[in-house]
Image 1 (cartoon, one colour):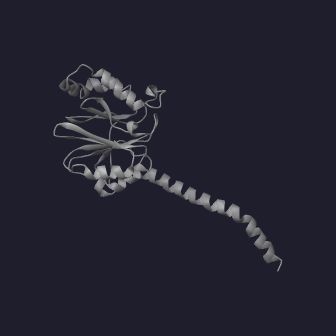
Image 2 (tube, rainbow, N blue to C red):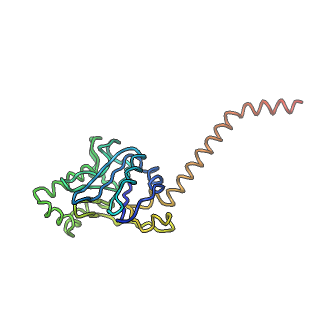
Image 3 (cartoon, rainbow, N blue to C red):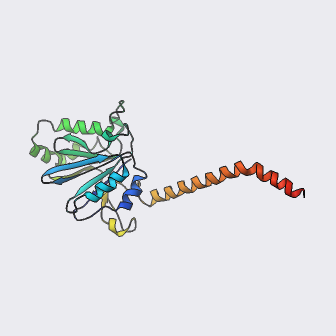
Amino acid sequence: MCLIIKKPAGRTICADFLKNAWERNFHGWGGFFVQNGEVVWERGLDFDDLVAYNRRLPAHVEACIHLRKATYGDVNHDMAHPYTVRPGLMLMHNGSIPHLAPQNPALSDTSELARLLGDLLKGLSDEQAAAMVRSPAFARLTAPLIEGSMVVLMDQGGVVRLGRDWHTVKSCEWTGAMTGIEVSNSHTWGEKARALSRQAQRGSWQGLVQGLQERLAPAFRVIGRATSGR
């Protein structure tokens, strides 16, 4: 499972939100936005690079950031989103598509999806492709293929969403700076995710304490016998 964050024009994505989401989606990151009529994109594997990229995003543009949690495919720079569907059209994906799962670990379900969509749009002009991906017919055509997932496309005209709808961050879910920003899911960063993190941390601490107790138990027994024999 991954996470896509859509930054509206005039807004910024909080670094602490990215840090929280990265704890569960740490297999790569990528982003895209439109500048001077072209899709500008970048991707990487390092969290510090992600923070720097987020800081560099122009405030006036709408942008999307993808954090990857690998389901299929290797963990490397090439497997990070976005993918190229065709020149000028990029793709991000949140979810898994088992029937597109490749046997080759150098590929992923998302890379296969990008290839299939590229084949569907082959032979069309940029204007025709832009109209096609925004048409209700295209959404109906791809719905069975991506059922349960979210696919975000970007061309020079901006963002196109396919599949499930956005989740809008509420003030009760995060600090006010993120309120109203749309994300692809709530379970990889929200209160449930934070609660699971706290539970895991407590579990790790309890495991450490239990391990120390087990190791020190023989010494405590010796000390106890020596004390009782006095």
